[in-house]
Image (cartoon, rainbow, N blue to C red; front, side):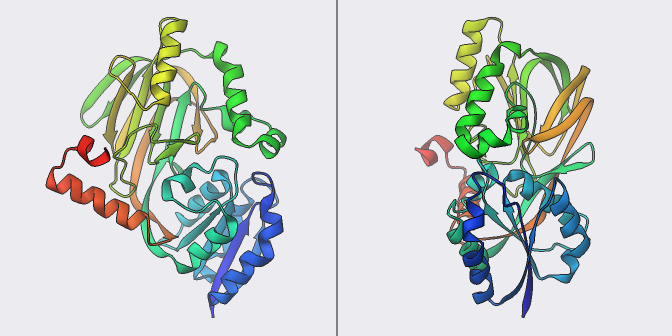
Length: 320
């Protein structure tokens, strides 16, 4: 039999995973796997377990929030050869699952792993530290890890929104220089996102409509610091409706970006604290992680988008 290591965080989200464990393991077993189940005990425990034991298994499956997925990816990047990874989202926001169109129903997601196909997905490094789908600084980026777990479990995504609104008066901009593709962008920015995702903070298509998850490029959004409260309100409204105008935003795609700031600023990696840095180098690791996903979304979506890019169709026509 093939061997499967199932690493899960039973406290993720609202704790629904606990009541579905037997059925999930049964799905894996019926799919032809000899299953080892491991409940994580603390932060980075999942990383340690996968790093130490993954070479004994044919498939690794992680279940929890984006933090659990991040630990699994970080561990698998330590191996010379790609080890397949399945993911069952059980967190409050599940941005990466939204991007990959993984079912939010735990049993259905488990079946998708068993029936799925391989997809090689881009991830990144931040000053040498890996992240899965987004690195960010500034307004709202600290909300995920600063929101109390108890509130997340009770209120889910609404807890993030409430925490973010509470922090609005304290946000300020940062003067910085950003190097990418032989260019330098300078300015005062209140928010920066470097991502490979269709969903950030639970908001779909926040960054761009033409995200390709395996093209070796990040989507970068820099939000210029508003000059007054009215300007701030307009900027937030524009972001909510994916109207990233040049007046308020700088956007571009790149595989290698360097940020230099006059002071140390706090960064987040996949919604977790990433430390304070005055210099940040971000590199795209093209197709570095092999995911096992249902065959009806990612492959078809990427092939269709490649066809549009190749044949030169107008994106407005395509998406409308």
